[in-house]
Amino acid sequence: MILCLKMPLMRKLLLKAGATQWIIITQDLGFGRIEHEFVLLKQHKVSVIFFKPPKKGFSYWDMVKIFVDKWEDLKAEIKAINGHCALLIERSGSIKSLDIIK
View (cartoon, rainbow, N blue to C red):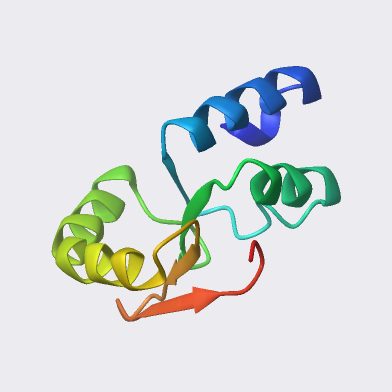
């Protein structure tokens, strides 16, 4: 998990993520809201997809199923934004754009 990385390693990883247009997928809703993470996400133009998990969290397989089910919607949303973004997939499966990294 990226949050466990020390700052120099996180900076290096997010630099590569931005340069190669990676998208970080997480169910950690706090990711990117810690000041240094937020700055690095914006600075390196890294996109993030958050899953809003149930109280116990999603299993890996549950996240994969939702991601596959919403793949076309996610692609359309990312294309419409035309740049780095933060999206939230609600428990219901709806997709919402977040303003945390714009």
